[in-house]
Length: 246
Image (cartoon, rainbow, N blue to C red; front, side, top):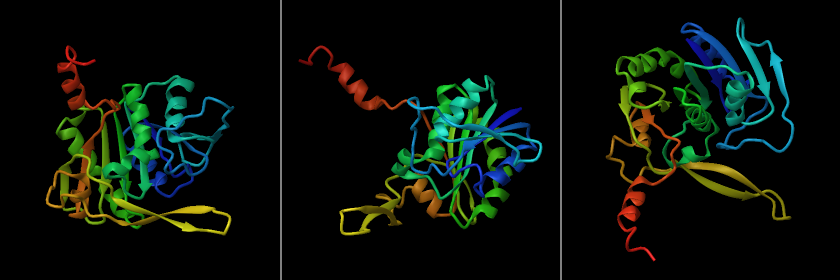
């Protein structure tokens, strides 16, 4: 199996090393990851200026590239630039969870959306900043769950979030915003700095199908994702009104 690994924390981030080591047990690994942290860059790409790409030797026995751009660009280069096909794309392990509506900001999740553009199977993997060791220890169970239940036959993209102590695994959907963002004044020249605030309880904390709720209850959250941004319900409603629309 040919495996591509990327992230949004940067190629020297703590979370990518154990993911590479784990993936080497399952196949031939290639790494293309950002030169510097790209958290919160979502699915941004660069097609305006030249991008620095360097071969680096930091993962034993693994071909790896540092790219001075976003996770989306890393996947684009890995597929189109290197002209290779991959059986699986892994993004992470992210330092911080990616659940609820907040996934729209995530570079970690955007990487699997780019993989989806190329019709590849992909998994975004995230955990709490202090739970990396626990997340690494749960990779086998998570991947076994996906394979045994043939999830890739149903959908090709999954967003996985791993709690500190997992009670099990749940298939989930997107919850409501997970973090409150606060702005603080840095100086008197109207400069501002975005500060991530406290966690927000889900609007329906009893709904264990929501990724935000399942994670808080100690479950590994596995959410099927899609690159299609069209609201299917709204589309079908409007389509039924085609003869009446002005």
